[in-house]
Image (cartoon, rainbow, N blue to C red; front, side, top):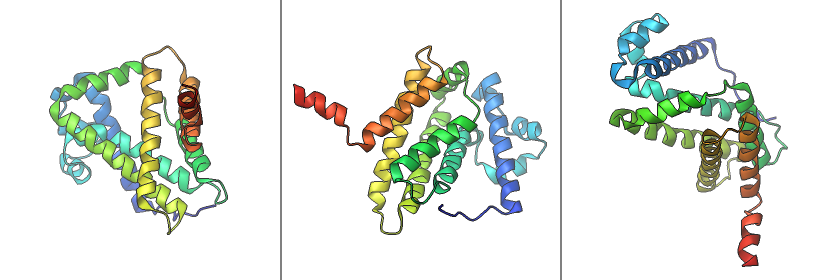
Length: 208
């Protein structure tokens, strides 16, 4: 098994505080809208000062979008904890599914509200930064998992494939009446197809 150094008590407390602030920011934004969200409200919800909030986030928009990176950090930990002899693609797929199974399921209505909030320019820009950070987190984990001779460009490509497969499966789930299991099935199927070199798509092209 690939070993990762356990987090110290101080780091665990910092991550817990950051996560609590991020969850409060998202919850209040969903209730009131981004325009009505204040840093003081987020801090009060968690029981800390606005100054403490600023130690973790540079803006309320960053706090609202932090859940995206937080989830990917957990995927990273799951990936690096997979058995060392497990093929890379299998490890990535299994780590992603493991984290999905353990994380709280998003509600369709909440997802639609978050997307509607993207009309706010500041939040939209922060969301783009969050997604860029997510891809870097996964690419770094893939490169670490693959070993010191791994090509970082290949790691970035794999991370991009995983992110796009997740987005496609998520969009399909959001715009349908399917349950969570169908999302997992679609996500897994897309990754397996990509790992195999898109044989189904290539066969369709050859048939023409």
